[in-house]
Length: 207
Image 1 (cartoon, rainbow, N blue to C red):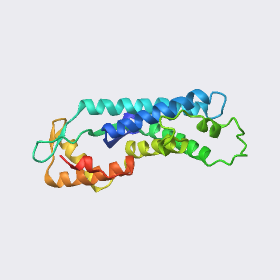
Image 2 (cartoon, helix red, strand yellow):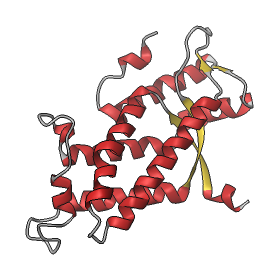
Image 3 (cartoon, helix red, strand yellow):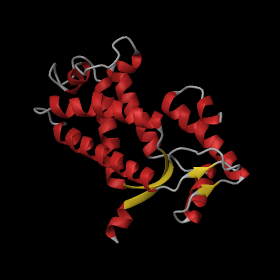
Image 4 (tube, rainbow, N blue to C red):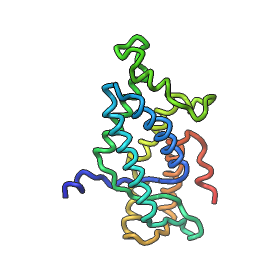
């Protein structure tokens, strides 16, 4: 009973775009920082944050494998990765604490009390998958974590309520959306894509 109280059911869209952002965040941001901050006061927070992030990814993958699959009203096309996922609130709160710590380090003045060996320096030393792109900078990687968190903790609205109700009513069976539910999906798809990539979501609309 206690575990149920601490775990919140959340609507998530777990598709290749989201997986790519999660992989990038874990591989280029959280894992290197957990290694490079061993002598810093933030080390335990970052290690715990990395573990929480990995556990959340496991929970998301399990939800995708479990289903149900969600189809368009005509039954011809699948909306990939639309799932209800139980994620412990403590994990989400911990990752927000990591995000606040990293965001603060990004804007810390050069002569801050942290000194040259602080978290800001560790961020500057991060490996980059793309040295020429803003996305490969420390700010870009922290931004990727913020985008991932916006999807792991998607703010509820009328569309998420509509789609959550459709999935819950199916009780594990595959879901064929009504036209009203499909409209809710299209709006959610636009919202999710803008949160993840800040780009046009055409690939989610076209069949």
